Image (cartoon, rainbow, N blue to C red):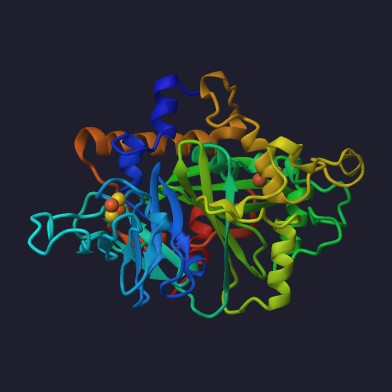
Length: 437
Ligand code: FES
Ligand SMILES: [Fe+2]
């Protein structure tokens, strides 16, 4: 439970809010490279941290992320012409490069004093292996990009996609910090059929790990603070003397990773970045990474089917619209009561939609003054405290979290491990959590 002030502080991310200031210290995924596939292609609306922005790829292949509103008289640059290394407003023809410089003002005489003085708000971008990162923070020279193993691979071992949630980023993210819901929300009733979309096999997963998860009963949760965030494990009893750990790093401000599999062979890892569009909408960046083994087209088709059984809505020109599912709160996510009786605990197809149904049904920003948190919620409690403290430290004392300037802190993996009961799980899995360059 939080008081109203802390709930506001935790969830509100607009400019000048404490959490908004904290988030702006970090690089944000603004779009996938595939969304701006060609030079001079059409501009893309991006909603990020409550700001309405336009992304475009110029003639040289460079990406710009600028304010949607033209600084002349405020028309939307979404309607702009992306041509000759700049985005031209179609109202009076002013043209801006990716750095926001006004490079042409054709409706004014050449000696107009405005020339050379007008600037469009533009945020620095860096593109790395399929992700367009943007820095919305206060520094003239942005910090380095985080060293994320999944984002350093060029070899087809990472599969990326995005997911939309019609709710605040923290309540969406708390779904991935909450191991105890797995045994309920994501349970399949037949232990031999582990897929949450009946008939679609799980590609590239360690099914032995999922089996242990489903059969292992309620987890014991433990969490420790780390320099970059919180490392937590969910521990399930296996037999006399052994326990199954799923060890997940949370990294500031919004990276979650899911550990799975077993000691013998880990086949793939999964993680998410819970990126706020505004206070009431989240656009997740999700990755699936399989070291040393590129995904085949067939596997990618299965990955998509497992996650998006209904595909996506036809995209409109609105920000994030192409990542919305046809199954949503208005149609109860197509819940099937007979499926619920016979196959799936929730009656809703696919993990992401099961999560969406729970997180969005809480309302756009859940009222945390009315919760009743128990020991099964310790990770959520710890991460909330961590975020609130980081936001207060920055706001009150100007303390920037060390993770901002230490990209190497992000070079970690989640793991699944069978360990002797009551082991020092942090120490015993240290090596396996290190990707070892
Ligand atoms: S409003 Fe954009 S050029 Fe006039
Ligand atoms: Fe979930």
